[in-house]
Length: 517
Image (cartoon, rainbow, N blue to C red; front, top):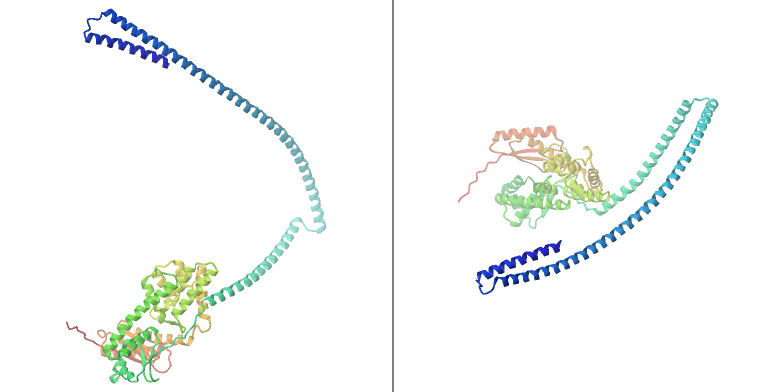
């Protein structure tokens, strides 16, 4: 095919050449060359081209024939190989067919054998059933029991044996569990106490300040006692200056008030200038310092519980634990102890140690508000936790540590155990001190209930033998103050239990302040 196209191309080129030559000679107007010679030259050229075309055609044809021959040989070889492959596959299939036929014969033989065996088996079963029926009748005749009666008696005996065995297994399991649990509990408790053993210093209601000069006592008392009255009025703390030499005692059931008074008095003694104005300024500075310390205490407790993102207001609230005691034990020290014990216990039993530590941190926070909210402290703790939108599981672990609220997790039980360990160890609590605190707080609360919207502050001083009630002067007249003092005294007398007498003092003070610019 390629050769044919080459020949056609050569012919076309020859014809084109002749035409071009004719046109050329005519264009140059060659008159001296005869037309016959031109024809002759053209024919010669055409003949040469034709012969060349034939040679090329022959060469192309020869090459095409060789290609066809090679292609035929390759195809024949491929066909022979395919036939050989097919022959081999056919032999394999024949072999497989023979094997399958052989297996089929074997299976048929086995099937026949199984059928024969099955027939023998059925015959044997029928014989056994027949003999069994005869034996049953014989046994019923010998025992005097029917089949149903014998079955019922047997089941009853089996049930009794099972009950006895079950009870024995349960008792054995209980004994083993108690032995293992007792040993494990002792180990955990001992390790917990060993790791978190802390020293305990009993809280008192009095704080002593050493003074080098007895004249300082006179400046503290002031002219006609105005300085000491001003100090006690501003702090709600009783100042004792006569009992021991070179010492001033500050007495109050409230550790926070006592600490503010201690800081303020220390500043006044250090400065030397003691008068109502400096006392008021010193008390303000002391309150500022204590507020800062409360925040730092809250940070310490949050770090102890591994709670870096605690809400700032909640942190300030728990910081007041240092100035609150529980049965004579510092609430802050007790909380740290419960956190550490709870963490050890949680890690021993593979519980959530972080949740236990946070619940231990907040389990007694409600004690800071028991004088304002008439509810058990653990219920108040749960309310505080809900206020700050803490997780329900954490809230339950906080408020269930006295078990009157059902603990819903192992972590809640661990908080209860840690709290019990901290409170029950020797020297941890002093019930008489706690009873004293409750008595003085109840006296203050009784005073607050009379005209609560008109009362600014209430201080129980002198070990609860005197109550000072500071009222709002714009809401209470002098006559109202007299009536209020009598009502408060009656309420305390009818509702409270206390040794000796309680003096009630209602203070109405009006101040006018202006700034000169």
